[in-house]
Length: 107
Image (cartoon, rainbow, N blue to C red; front, side):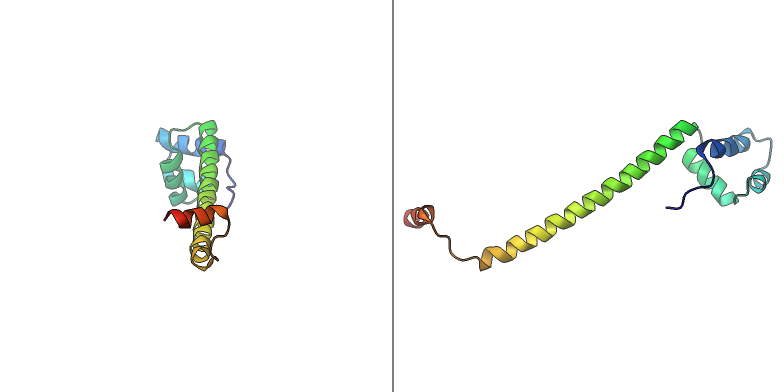
């Protein structure tokens, strides 16, 4: 993901200007050098959050992404191991040993 050139405090300041309603959103965006789409995306995501809460939200989103990737990797590993087991069960040689003989005799 591309790093933002705006800090959380800057985003909060820009959103606060728009929230006050004194200055038009188009003017705020022009001064900040962002598009109105960016402004409204920030508003949808961060409106009402303090800069520290914005940072925490970002950290949680990053952690969530890492955990999702880890779950996907582990699921793939599990599927591959199950596939190997399925193939080896039918091609394995007969079981040898005293316990195998006892199993055959009891059957």
